[in-house]
Length: 138
Image 1: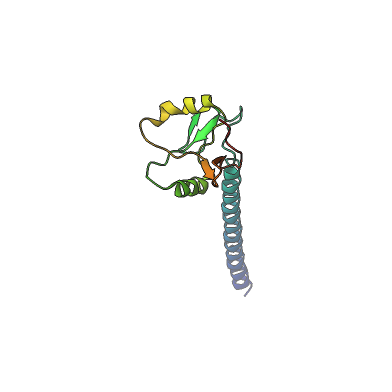
Image 2: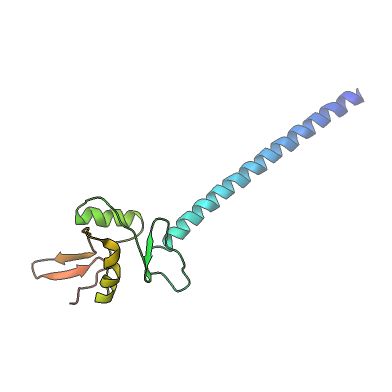
């Protein structure tokens, strides 16, 4: 009888060990997934402003670094509004330029294709605004 009880206790102990291992493993897997997902969202927020810092050495995957900026080229035709929406899906905006030199730096990378930039005419007063809300100054 004692041997039977000891055998049952041994089996129960093994089952408890297996169950606790599975539960702990499942919790560890879930934590890994949640933390990985958190890291994914956290890293995307760092790309909100596409200006690269001195310490930044790479742009997001499939983006090109030109000077201190990261650029992504969509190679299909869209309206200006659809293009801006596409940029926003990858946490960017249509290109905004602060100087003629910035435009000239980018031009060799574009080839002979046409691209939208983040400049739009507002109202009938010929007021041009960048997508960041700053008025264009010629």
